[in-house]
Image (cartoon, rainbow, N blue to C red; front, top):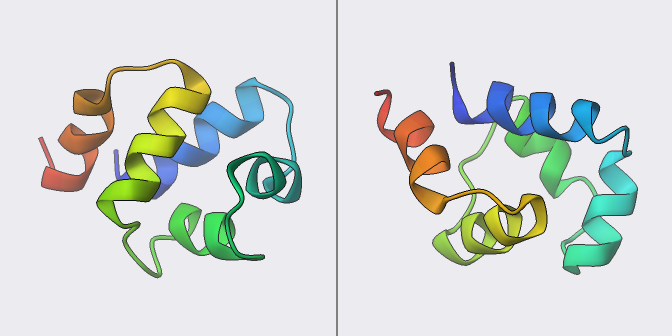
Amino acid sequence: MTLGEKLRKLRLSAQLSTRSIEDVLKMGYGNLSRYERDLVQPTFKSVVKISRFYNIDIRDLAKCTLGE
């Protein structure tokens, strides 16, 4: 599973829109959507914010980024 697929799965399971998450995390408009589509990789700072938002271990997201 790619990082984008993982992010999309987390968002959909929480029944949230990309915009609502971007607002809470103070991310630029469309960033999360680009992450979910694997068009760009998030910065480390963004990965930390996202992991805290979903209350998951950052290593779970890192595994996706590293392809493990």
